[in-house]
Image (cartoon, rainbow, N blue to C red):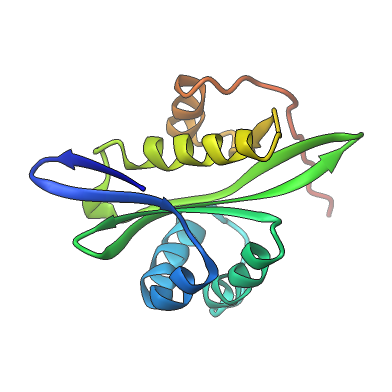
Amino acid sequence: MRIVQRENNLMDFKILHALDIENHKEEMVILMEMVLRDNITQNYPSNQAEEYVKKIPRYIDDGSAIVTGAFANGNLVGFSWGYELTIFGERRVHIDMIGVDQDSRKRGIAKKLIELQIDETRKRGIRIIEAMITRDNENSYNWFRSMGFNDERIKVRRDLE
């Protein structure tokens, strides 16, 4: 567990367990809705955030997910969700979603969440961590680059009529 002082607020960062998700389900759904709204351009079901949050405890319990959380005064204000996968024999953790409450941004919370996720990835003996970013999201791209991430592949798309 990590505690840092930021602008007179104690922040608590930790690896989340299934019970943490259950205990902070409402906050998690709100953060997940924000992540979906900010990053997904396609239409998705209105209950998508709740469906994701409902599945996360199972992924934590089966060991496939690494979920980190940031708490201010006991309230969940940020999370990062990554999952383990293997590509051509290489074990990796794919960071799927990062969400930080609007009022808590620009305080280094996302950085601490990812650092904690990286630490846990190393503990699992995994040496690659990745994320996929929407090309138009230059802020996210530049932020990941500042965290030491490098380009690996470029995803291209063509819409057919």
